[in-house]
Image (cartoon, rainbow, N blue to C red):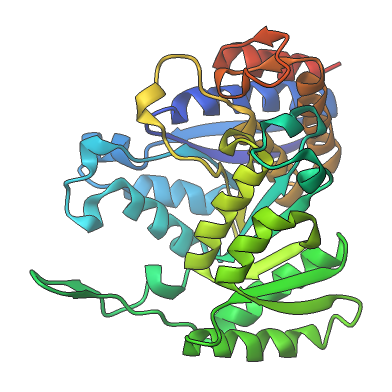
Length: 355
């Protein structure tokens, strides 16, 4: 029997609730598919600050580096917002991505037919949309030095090397080869020198993928096109800041940020997490939607462990549960037949997946 070590980081806010449901589903799937998952739990973010005084303790990072994958909930909250920037929960997440070498963030934005009415766009505009945003995750303005804030001015630095661009471009093209063979590079090459370098490097990478169509789009136009005609996109490739913004926009085209997973890959160990935040305002109420975290667990099986049968089972179970009308509060207004708590939704999906 295959055995895998999973570093589980529940995090803050609704993180513990939604992670519990993902683990519940993974236990059901592993039993059915004949592999074993060993879950080890560690602190990061605000929970780690409260215990250790820092957002990413050494034992958490060491465990992540030794594991087969990291399953992560969410971090952050007002409680820690006034700390120095390097001690805030988000600094821990940025650092673990960097230390694990997780330079490529894959964020699928898929319209579930069962929830097409949840989108604020007309059904004929979004029906059939299936987008993968590939975001560079460990470079750009989030990491560039120098960066300083003074009393009356502040500055940040956006830096990219050809190597950083090339490696994430290859991930995007490889992803496109398994999909509809189209990559759209989103940049601001009419203004930014970094974007000009992106165009040069990505254009060179494209020469090795002759079956893939490459086109270019300025980020302001891309933001508009995502809501005007989302079906034109297959794989969107972009840098860190633009990807952060566009992937959230793409999620709302789908109707709920609580539905969409992500995978941060490229190094030895990948990080699998929902794209939404820690939502401390609803923590502990049992109303958080665990589907994005459960689908992140599916991505973990697919990309980290190569357990594709298990990943397929989870995705099929989620679609079936939605088709049968089970809803959490955030999507209750869209063809709900039964309103579920966070725990109930996890149990129902686990039950469907194990049938």
